[in-house]
Length: 177
Image (cartoon, rainbow, N blue to C red; front, side, top):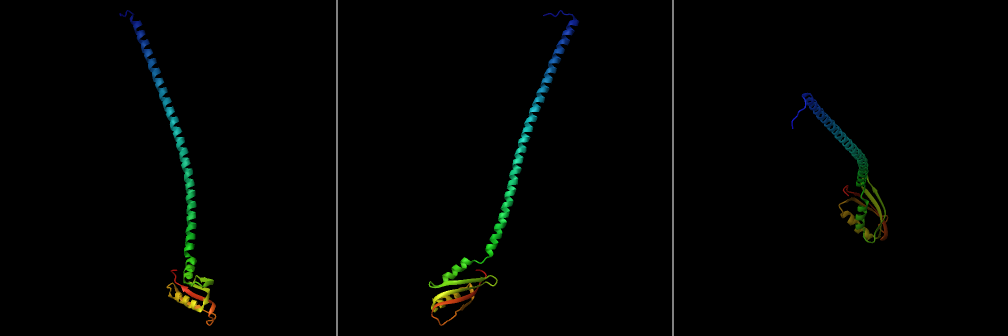
């Protein structure tokens, strides 16, 4: 096709094309900028939401940490109390073990009536009942043969009475008992 338009008309058309092209490019640029701004805005909202979620998680973790710290303090308090109780019980005289050992030494027909223990000097005293004087002699030998008892002393109210005798035994204990 042959262009028979005058040069002024040609230049007008060229300017119109350039103007249309400029408008198109401007609209594309504005649309791109607007799209980019909307993308940045959505990224900002997403990041703000993620930050809020992380803040909630951090607050929950702090709350759990506070609860854990409170529980740790309670555990420390209970452990301290239990340690004190353990020390107290460890320092006590093992009465059940001691009485078990004495009951093994007592003859079948003998029994304890009274018992006392002095912690300061590790001395024990008890009153027993025996049916015969021979039972007392056997018990005395059994007591003296034990390595845990020292200074074993038997006190009889009447050595001449042969039956139903109440007697007293006092002795010191080794510290390891």
